[in-house]
Image (cartoon, rainbow, N blue to C red; front, side):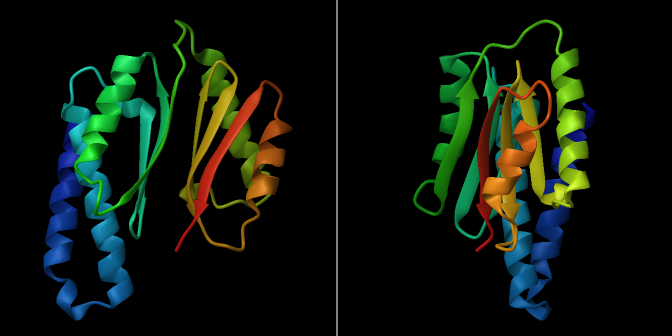
Length: 175
């Protein structure tokens, strides 16, 4: 229920902000449009049956939508894909969702997420722009960063963390 309220409030706030963008800079209006699209897609995933919406990160930058995370089976994957389909044509859809069945105890995954974030923070990477997801040692990095950030180094730094077996670096540069 808390997640639902968060998404709904984000949608309402983004819509309200968009209404007042005529006096704002073009960059701010663009950022607000990105946030509104992101919130609508997150809400669409939340309302779609059989989709582990909390396990899917959604990022929007300019005309690109990135979906990243893990699902348990092909049906969930197809549901995620169909939720994003209504944005095709207006946006380029980057579907970085991976089918990898979850396990009962995800304590090691949670610990690994914390260790990776700590490692990235040590190297002064912009954690506010990067999402980290882990399932059974498989790491997905996603988000949009400034071009000053070395994407190859982020992957290398992540692989230094004990327990990270595979790293899919799906981080993209902001346009």
